[in-house]
Length: 474
Image (cartoon, rainbow, N blue to C red; front, side, top):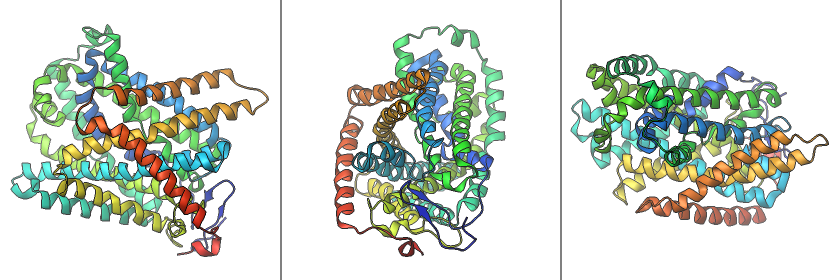
């Protein structure tokens, strides 16, 4: 075990990057970070508005099916997590089964996915910030220059928090992610009591067909993408082979059950305000108006800024460790494998992730005239697609891993195969969904960038010399 302030170390065979400090993070703390990363409260509110548009009274069932399908994929992740301690998450697991070539392909998609995810969360934070400031009378808040400066400031601040280490990040995100919870609960319960729950219509799936439910479930899968990234923190948790599966399953169940409950409560209300939703009215505005508590909308929106910012800090923490592991494998320049001698954070990788977090939203704002709301929609869809391919490959690897065992568990194979099928359906649906404009091209952009990333990683590995521990000290 490393002493505080000692040199970092790693096991290059199993791709384990050890933190520079001896302190290990507890299960509860990592679960809180995971819930922050999933934007549990903002995502629940967005899902409450969007899912009923897809599935009507069957929205809750669509989300439940999506949660179950994701649980099947997390079962594949857990097969590896119980056997190996790695910091590259899916990337490392695929490498352990299939070797470096397929690991590079997954890395090409996975690393780009992290960069796009952080840019999407930055754009989302800017969107909430501008909306709140404009609502309190600051007219310039919707100006492009202000939103660009906001994106830069948010990315720098999030990167600084991640730089300070996992403990500092967890302390911050745990507060920011859940500060809005009391007000959201009060407004939602009051709105439901005013409009009525109408559980019966949802239980019998009134005016809803199975095609809509299945379509909604495919859309709902995107709400769970990224939970697997928590496995990148394995080296910083106590007894990781036991605790990482517990962490992944806990975060998935807490987020999934929350989404389903919120949909059961809010779907009747949202069904009654479809026109307003289509006109762009936010779910918080609909809920607070229905509750007769319009005065809560601005405070809730303000606290949601903190929740989305917490998600950005969490994703930089996950992703920086994956990038550092990629650097150890010489997929990217070795400078990104360096970790801080005191805080244990991957310093180079943290900077690498923070820069695109600001640059991509600013570029969309200035070069493509895409405001934060539109940028968030594009980037959120794009980063979800970058995860789908690695999930499918991982599931194949998990089945191969099961067949290596003497006592093969047929049920495990069925579960993993089910998860793979669900995300394969999401991949196919993305090409044939009938989307128009930029959304139509996103699947093709994903494939093109993944291939380009694979070749870039291959070239860098061929030109690089092996990394040694003495070269990775900051």
